[in-house]
Amino acid sequence: MHFQYLGTAAAEGWPAVFCNCPLCKRAALLGGRNIRTRSQALINKDLLIDLPPDTYMHKLTHGLDLTAVRYLLVTHMHMDHFYPQELTVRGSGYSHDMVSPDLNIFCAQETKDYFYQVSKDELDAESDRHLIWNVLKPFETVQAGPYTVTPLPASHMSDRNQPFIYHITDREGKQVLYLHDSGWYEDDVWDYFAGLSKPVDMISLDSTNGAIESHRGHHMGVSEAAEVRDRLRELGAIDDHTRCFLNHFSHNGGLLYDDLTAKAAPLDLEVSCDGMEIDL
Image 1 (tube, rainbow, N blue to C red):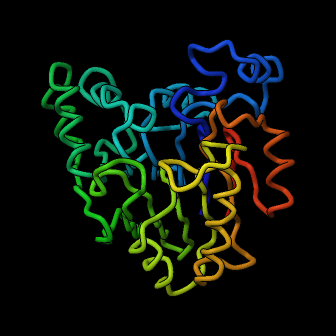
Image 2: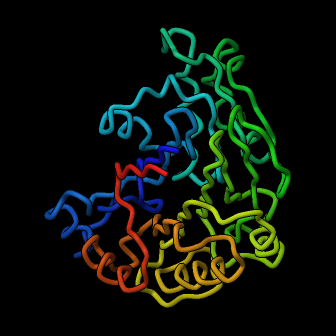
C-alpha cells in the first residue's frame, strides 16, 4: 500500500486563513513542514479520503492525477473535510480525458443529502450521472473495488451515524486505521478493534489539540493519542511493526513541526506533514 498525506491541518489550515497569532506568523516564516493545508489522504493513487477546499492545491502541489481516483471516502460533512461544489466540475464541459469517468463515493446519508442541498444549482445531470453513491452505516463492511472498508462511528458530532473513522484494507492485505476526526472512542468501537484478526500496518491518530491536555472531547491531543495507541496495542490491534502517526493539527494546539516531533519522539509516534508518503 502506498499512502500519502496530502493535507494535515484542522479546519482553519496553518497558517490559519484569518489569523495573525504568533504561531501562524512563525509557521509562515519557517515554511516547509510547518505549512499545513486541510486534511486529505490518498491511497494507491485511486482511493481518496475526504474532499476539502484545498483539494485543487493538493493536485498542483503534489502533481496528482485526480481523474484516476475511483473511490472517495468522506469522513463527515464539516467543511474542512467535504467541499461539495468541487464535484460539480467533475464532468460535462469542465473535465476531459478522465482515467475514471465514474467516482464511487462512500459516506453517510446525511453527507449525501448535504451534497445535493448545496450543489443543486450548479450540478448538471451529466456530471451527476458519474457520481456513484454508496451510503454507509456504522460497522457495516463494504467493498470499494479492491478495498475492504469498515466505517466506525467517530466521537465527533452528536449523531453517531454520520461522522466516520475508517478501517481500510487493500488487495494485498495491508491495513490502515484512519481515525479523524474523533475524540475518545465509545465501547463498541474498542470492541471492534479488539476483534481484529491481526494487527494493522498503520494508524493515523487525531492530534488537533496538540499540547493541550484535553480528554474525552471531539478531538485529541498528543498525550491522548498516545493513550489510544497504547490501548490498541493492549487489544492486539497493533504491534511493534505498526507505524503510528499523529495528524490533523491546529495552531491552537501550540506545537509547530519541530515542537511536535520533540514531543512525539519519546512516545514512539511519528508526525505527519503535507505530502508525506508512506509505503507499507
